[in-house]
Image 1 (cartoon, helix red, strand yellow):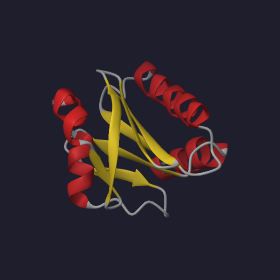
Image 2: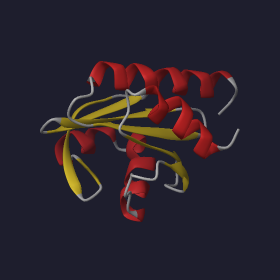
Image 3: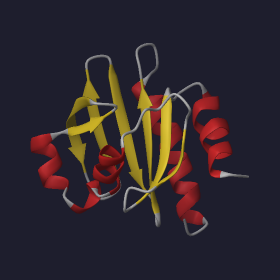
Length: 126
């Protein structure tokens, strides 16, 4: 199964996630959903988010050119919101998983779906 298959089947295909990406800690995009317009500098910032958690709380994070307020950030997860949309970034052993929910989707289900994939990645060393 490819990284794109994981994005499409496990995240987008769940119906709980609008857009998603899997990145290396350096911001290298391993895979993303076709509808996710993630800029290179945004991917780098997301990949490095866990190395500057306190700064995120004050500055927020940009995804698709839109600035999100960071509501919570710890060593496992970053949570952001902007209007009726938001994101969850989960850290695994070797990567970060970004999931965005948009209007009509439940934030809790987006988090649960993304967190379950992150837990699976950790269990296999990724």
